[in-house]
Image (cartoon, rainbow, N blue to C red; front, side, top):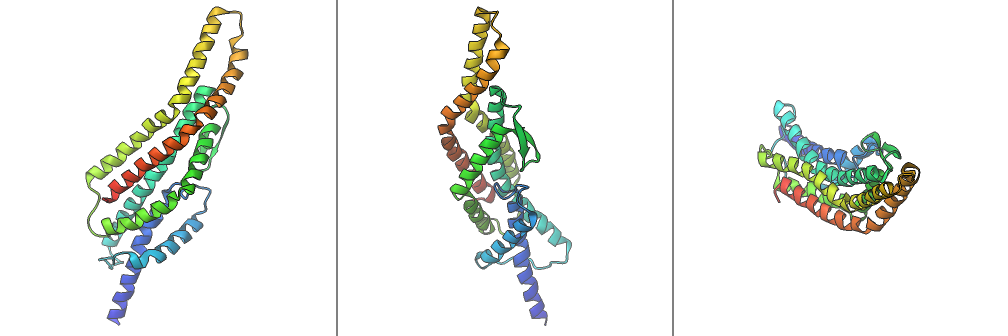
Length: 257
């Protein structure tokens, strides 16, 4: 009976602790972490995926489920899974921030809508960039890559007493700062284009003061902003590939591969 109990506890540990890490990643992962996907569906997906990959995961060297040490192990797995999923969330926020910057410069900031991921009003241009980046994320099988990454993390960072090194937290914080730099690079061409247009209107106002710049400039600025966005849209794929590669490198750094 004692052997059967130990086997049952070991099976539960091999299921529950990996499930905690995988669930934490799915709850914040790009595409799956949005509020539009119900939590029961995410939970069912995490359970099904955990059961599927259990045969290839290393056995858990800890099966004392009714102890304070179990609480520490669960917190450890939540931390690791959340860190991996957070990288993909930062990756998508690059395009949201770039879209918001372009919208403000083009006079399109008043056209806002509710962001289902963050639950707040953001410019429609930012939502357009977010939807486009999310669709490309699914198209290149980014979700499959992240699932492979979390499975690989169990071999590189097994469920033991080893925690993240302090350098890993510092690199994750620096990665959050990189989000703003990447957004600026993506929005730089439209912002410069709008700056030239606004400078031209300033020269027109100086040359012809009787010209009503507000009646003419505002609709022309919005139309020019849309045209500049359309012209620079081909750069979107280039920036998407570069930023996604940077995100993959960050995830590899976190799990030690």
